[in-house]
Image (tube, rainbow, N blue to C red; front, side, top):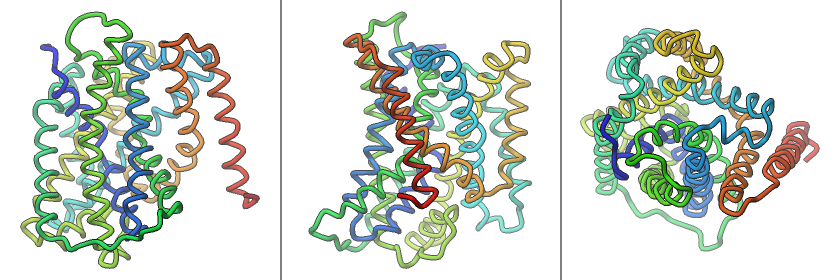
Length: 383
């Protein structure tokens, strides 16, 4: 396969990232903080853009090999965390992508059920992913540009229709932390640690030095991150402007309702088509990664990629019946406990590669223990 350049790789990375959580959580953020959207956006971009870029670059230093990356914390902890991360992104996050895709299509095809739609989309995903080495090429050169074009078109149309938003002069700390939390739930850091394998395989040149990997990976990450930040800002601000109109809309239907409200029926078709493509492309990436993990890591090659892909798609079909809220009930506690540790691990691994930092395992474990205790105290009402 012909190697891809920085722009194509950045588009592919953005396309892998931008799924259900990247659509729903900026909208939820805007709806909840209203006039305090700008400090909230700072928090959201920190955890939803900057942190994933750090994770992406960190894993690229291990040539996109997430097993070598996680090996820094020991064999058993590494395998355990990889397993939970794979379940989160390959099953739960992929399933919520399909659920959001259904919510965007359902207003125009009211008679179609979630089950029927899921089966149809699963067939499309299989057709596009059964040759694993073509996934990044399809995303970077076809579906990615189509997704970006549609999303930018939506934001352009929205700008023509929005009114001035009222903001507070005082920096609202609560909104900032709200943004941090919503950025966590986008799950982009977890995705970045595993997407890097697909991106690395499509990089120009042969074996790269550490400095070359940092330079190349940072360029790709920043380009993909910039695209993410632009879309996040647009979605959050629009949701803040129309917060009262979408106050009682279910989470998975926010985008569909908002696009029809602002753009009318014709513009709503364009907006919802963008969501259908956005969620399809991300689901493709997540399912591909999980199928590869199942085939090569869990079953050690005893099950080829294609049967593993079929199994992964079938499992996703089951979880899609939980709907968006049901899936988030499973994702949220796992993500909130794991995320700070993954951030610490990513930073520590970069420091190890650059400055021979020797306390990667200690840093990660201490962060995990403190986070777990804090979550337990919060959950029991003691904090």
